[in-house]
Image (tube, rainbow, N blue to C red; front, side, top):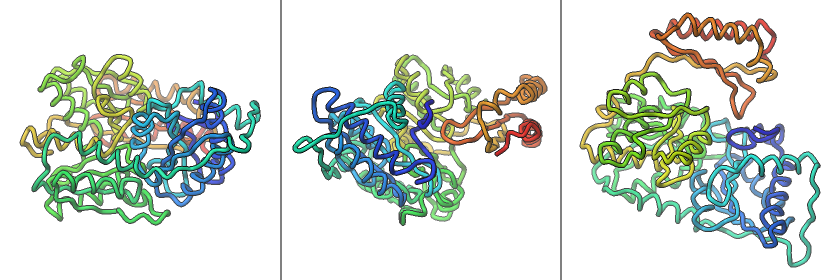
Length: 448
């Protein structure tokens, strides 16, 4: 991670930690780096979610790009995976998504993709940061070399068509609930499910710039749970603000996490002979219950650091087919280079229809260990994480749990948080040991 960019882009409160000047500078450097630096005019595609500040950052990025001689193609409100997809298939030099994902409306972020639709490499990101810090000088474009903006809503439409084309089945007579989080999926998701013949019921699809992720979407899935049961739906899918993650709700209102989704899709791919290397890719945050269920059906697994970036790197390196995070970032490398919430929901529908079983039955083999995760805001993540007394407290918990559970303490990649997680046989044990470690962090003066 760099000074400004974390595991999922440059994120912060709009015009506080992430300013419009930052956006101009990012546009300036990328426009020059992919353009004049390579002896050509750069083409960059930009998407945004529904936050009020996303419009400001869109114009700021365009200003920087054009000032460096690049052409900026604007997809308007669209999902993160659509930007990654269009960057790759329409031969753009790079792609930019303006979103802070599941964060509240007053936060925003800038995510960068290379020409293959993959998250930008660290070397290029560090050069962007050097330019922001004034360590690099680049020229401005003049006269006919100044760039322009191009309306590119056609890219979003092409992505919708791509999603529809990936479904092998009709969803006719299936009653499906969607929670669009008042975010980037609000137009796209329903269009896809309607086109596939589903009876689609949608909530939280009225964005006003201030209500993205507010008491809705994958971070507040309880509303979709209630909605699915009340309407008697077959299944429900909840997305986050930029729709790169998906959680599901079965017909009984029970939540299916990313771990359930990895199991369901991984098992089905194995059954049809399409699970490369007989492995799925998880992160260290996946539940013990997932691994036990995978062991029973003979599926192996990898464990990476938290972040879909690391999941994807592992999948590409070793040729794995499906992987993701418990939070709902699921990657299918046959179809995408990043987590895609809508694609994930389509893949789950494919399994449900092929197996002719309800979602509850497909997910039943995954029995979770109780898990408690608490986030604490700290002054310095490295200082809190590396404090000898904190490390000692973690070791003591690990020893006490033995083989009946585990503890994981890690830094957030995008926020000033330390995350303390314990899995154990009961919720009370989890709470006890999580609080035990947090008490040490507090006592040592690390809390903000």
